[in-house]
Amino acid sequence: MGENVSCEAQGVSTLFPERIGVSEETWFDLASLTKPLVTTTLGLLAFRSGIMSPTTKVRQVLDEVRGSDVGDLEVKDLLTHTGGLPAWLPLYCLAESRLELLPSRLGGIRLESRPGEKVVYSCVGFVILGMMLARIADQDLGSLFQREVLKVLGLEGELGFRTDLATHSLAGGNAQSAIETSLIRNLGFDERWLPPTGHGLPDDGNARFLGDVSGNAGLFGTARGTVALASEYLPGGGLLLSAEEAAEATALRTQGLEQGRGWGWQLASTPGCSAGQTLSEEAFGHTGFTGVSVWCDPQTMNVFALLTNRNHPAQRGNDLHPLRRVFHRLAAGAVPQT
Figure 1 (tube, rainbow, N blue to C red):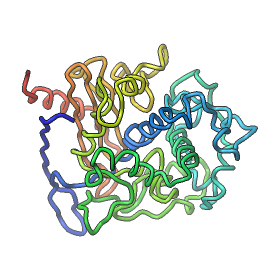
Figure 2: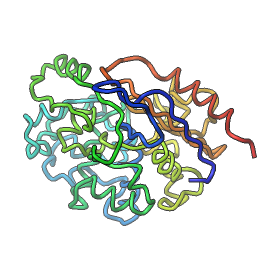
Figure 3: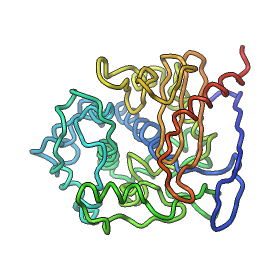
């Protein structure tokens, strides 16, 4: 991350039980930013060490899914959301709230399309990737991320799983997972399996089921930490990632399909994405359900993180893409030209 970092905080982080102003130190639930920032990053490090590759099959790591369609998927299918997996499933329902049952139950998931046929953004795929990385390392995903990424980059005070409420100021969460509950009902599952919510816990039910640490969600952090880690993917790499690794992760790997996707990252070539017209066609980024986003523009070497909260005091389904596009336009205009 370069020296020219600008951060501005406006509004409040919590309305109930008391009104607390937001600051640069406020930690937000980064939701699906976990996918590129944590899972893709750890995946690249696994590729580097040789313990996993883009063509590693799920069954080679999670023996419980041998003989299933899920078991035959490759890591690159999951990283690009082209594996044919459903967009979302309440995995806690599939496993009847028993974590030890989850690996074997994954094998029963039916693919909705043939691998490589289409892009369907899938939280399920990144949950599986997170489980694979943890299994290979024989270590909790959160601990692995802290050791391999946060310590190396000096970001332990800016990003992390299982946030400490005593030492971190957190943006408020929602009291009830109304949207997730509705999804469970629509799929015909018993909503009583939904893990309870609470302040400091991930909004994502699957992440809560997995001990608040998952490959698809569960990461919390500041805007400063988000920008610092995302900057590792700019051309030339950074302190952790090499130039080659950054380029591999952000290259277009879904040519001719519905969305432009790299490994974990969405590309600005995706029609209707939140990048807007201000960022270059080479830009890459990601959004999170809670109201967060980060976009990187290799052409200008700028990184734009917008952390908002549409889940407090209650979940709202408003479309934040127009706001993100305006933010990019205003923020890009405020960056000094060199």
